[in-house]
Length: 335
Ligand code: KG4
Ligand code: ZN
Image (cartoon, rainbow, N blue to C red; front, side):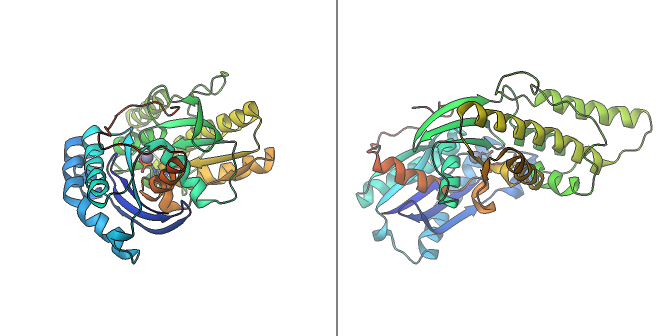
């Protein structure tokens, strides 16, 4: 089955063609980096307007670069839950229009389910059940993937998402937006043990996360260094801050796997592109015997191929939507 996926939940306008939930024929992603650097982050209404400008071209490009035509598309899957409401509406309106005019099924997907499917799409050997750490600019969650499309939330952030912490610290340090890739690069030159930043909630039994105290600690350390005319090694601050986030993400994921008695974990979302996080998970896998999967880089951040893959699984379970499909900014995953 050939599914067109559409993703517009935040600042990426994306459309993809995926065959049988397995083969990515195209995955076009238009980001809004020019707007993000101008405003220092995502401005919801401006992002929605940019989606409106781009969505038609992005869909056209996804179809043409796959060597297909509109008539070949057999269903359309769109991110309908979790995201910026104005942004979600643009994708939903485009998907409904195509569904009605082509007479093909419409499938509404939860954005987080899309991220979980990024790994199932990228790694055919990834099995269920497993634990998925999904970590990006909008969320940080540990999910028990009991079966395809069956989830149990084990823990999530109580305040900032990990990617949000990367973005806010980079902005504070004047490094630009998005912060994750810049800090990742800078940290490679730094000493990750130079500053001892807190690992929030790491000693408690909870599988929830908290990153706002860490953020405050980094900001206070920076101000203290400035006030005392002390050296300000940005590489060391970046490496030590990143290490604190990586430590917490890895240790809680290992704990979640132990509690659910699984030997396989997957890591997904924008922060899963982080090179130190990948390295630390590989080490943890070696020490604990866990098998760890990551998607390739193009499937880490928001993209429509993961939405099309989730759409295939949902469609096979009879989960097609009607033309009254609505968008929901905050929605539980476990439905
Ligand atoms: O999944 P995504 O594209 O969008 C959301 O759903 O939020 O993730 C974007 C987030 C941003 O916060 C960005 O800073 C972070 O992922 N990110 C990274 C890296 N690449 C992107 N964080 C750490 N290291 C990276 N290499
Ligand atoms: Zn995302």
